[in-house]
Length: 104
Image 1 (cartoon, rainbow, N blue to C red):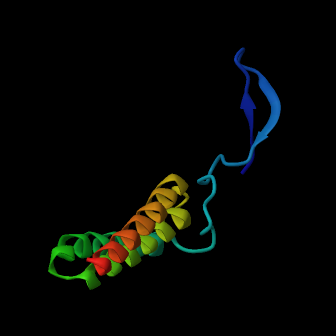
Image 2: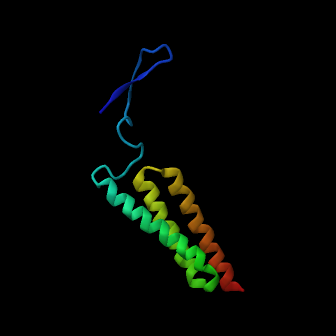
Image 3: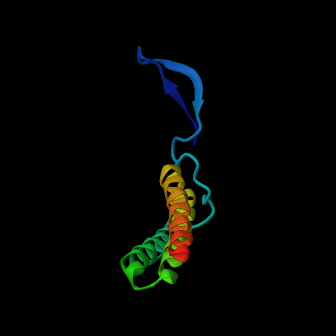
């Protein structure tokens, strides 16, 4: 569905707004919304559980980094690309913490 964008004076500006009716940047137009939501709940829950368990061993730090990557994928799949970028950065931070824990 394409609508025309309104100008400040209430008329149409003559340009098409391509995102009306769907999320901008959404990569899952053909996947049911509930499937993406279930994936997101599982990915974020796994990430949070691994973060809580990090003090029990270095392996949980790597698992947390994996959880961040899974959550990042969810962000991009759901169209929430800022969330996807932030989670991708957190995965890099977690891997750096893993390498530093290895050196100690």
